[in-house]
Image 1 (tube, rainbow, N blue to C red):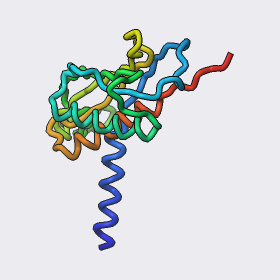
Image 2 (cartoon, rainbow, N blue to C red):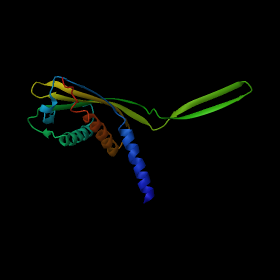
Image 3 (cartoon, rainbow, N blue to C red):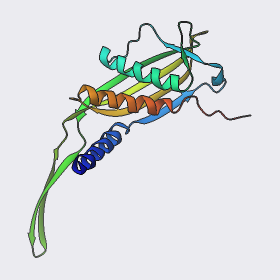
Image 4 (cartoon, helix red, strand yellow):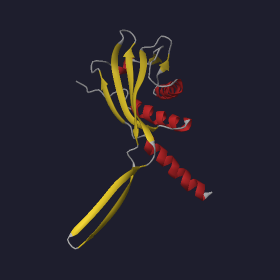
Length: 179
């Protein structure tokens, strides 16, 4: 039992560290009073560039986090939420280094190289927009850059989007400077 507990904690920490590696950049309209917005809904026709399963994962997490923040999902919302992703696939930046060296006297020779480990990854820039429904004006935007394994299973994808969206929405509403 102790064995399972120890490795279960290690696995959980690894997943959290891997999935929380997203960096987040936020921009917003400084003239907007964000506390006036209390209801939201998603654009009816989101073209995220992701598959329908990932769209549903993101919406589920956003619903949960926004409702925890006190927002109400409404058919006549004050905020419309949009999201989209740009993705590129690359080899993992994790490598296993191998080196061979030799020498004698004042002469030395060395050869080294790196073998990629971990497979290919999807580099994803997920953009989330909050638009004022009354005038269709963008009032808040966040872009999260993260990596997801190309062959991630549904649980890994769910954990990834949960971590990324939660991290992004920690930035909303923005802390506004008082004049």
